[in-house]
Length: 395
Image 1 (cartoon, rainbow, N blue to C red):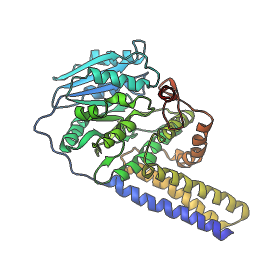
Image 2 (cartoon, rainbow, N blue to C red):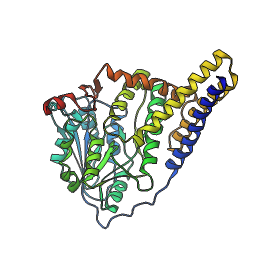
Image 3 (cartoon, one colour):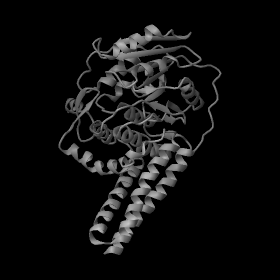
Image 4 (cartoon, rainbow, N blue to C red):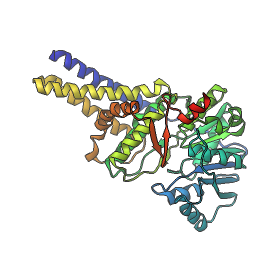
């Protein structure tokens, strides 16, 4: 029996090592830089906002400082004037002179109808008000580099069959809590690295990671606009799937988009992790989700082998099980560093194991609780990850 347990631990260790090499090659891949077009089209970027994010004012300043070589319109969309983020945005707009060719407005979308998230409702209004030849959307917890919009448009226009373009989201700031580390590993390593591997040399995915995304208007019109995502909890992934179905490609660039976090507690992280598991039920391909599930499963096997081996005195199995756990933690930290992340505090190295341990319980919680809290709003979700209100109205 002890030989069987040692073999199980060895299989887990070998899989972790092989998968690390595969993902390391993917995240280290460098692609040619798209050339600048003869003429840059005008661009509108819509930013839905609810509440005050960590570093909210600096996030707004970064977007205002974008160096885009054509008319740039920025639309900040809130539910109503009572949102605390309104003061943040208006204060920054008042103190920050806009560059030539840049305009900025604050809009109010009102409460969303049943079957539509607040974020999508803000996007619908922004798309209706947008004047640019291209239209983009940017999450409020992001901090764009000065030239990111230009890089995105370069790539979009260099690919005539691309309906949209987006940047990979990266949590790369200093992590001060266990929750910050968990979020960084989840976003960059458990999700971002497999996405890079799936995108491959073509840099295309069957969905969009939409923390920032820019669309051709004709492509967006071909799928019925952003409102075609009515009923979806996760609008960006669904819009990307519709793009592919309509014959367009979703193209991802190498330049990362910085996600700003700070002071996230473990409970907040578990809530976020639960939302992400719900998001994964919205039609993500198994080629993307399978590596995370197998990675977590390998860690679970290593833990079980180590515990049983220690109980029974099977020290060879224990040694291999511990080696697999160390390899998993080392792999996560190395991939995180390869993606440009700041060094993670060593005292939180156990978060790799904690994510794997929490996974089955987080997924299982959905059998008992079909609600998710997102941006201060409660949504009921059906078995396919859609909003229950939309499912009922469709029947």
